[in-house]
Image 1 (cartoon, rainbow, N blue to C red):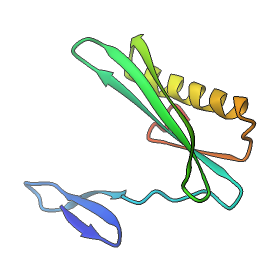
Image 2 (spheres, one colour):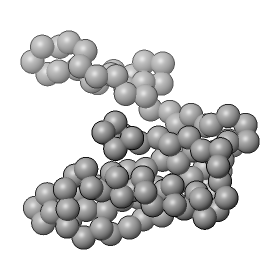
Image 3 (cartoon, rainbow, N blue to C red):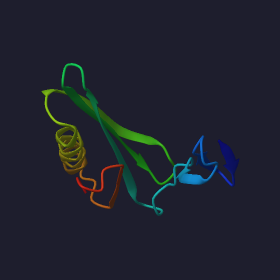
Image 4 (tube, rainbow, N blue to C red):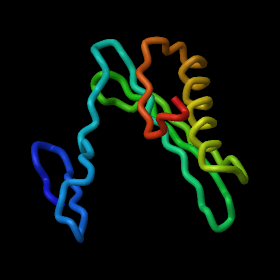
Length: 108
């Protein structure tokens, strides 16, 4: 692994070539905006899924968050339910200027 300009570069052990570059820094939304970060999880051995999320303001301050046990399901289920619960929470709090950030392009 190499660190360069706030990013993590992963090197494939056999080939020594660059595989993936992942940003390590959370970037705040524009002034007056909010950001929802959502993550789903699944324990394969028992098919248990869950999701969690946090909403922060443009200063990076925690506004609200959630965690939920979703029972049994597939990996995409946790991402979609996480997005649902995060958007529901934002709506309940009257937050409309919202950026969503998650690692599931399919769910988005």
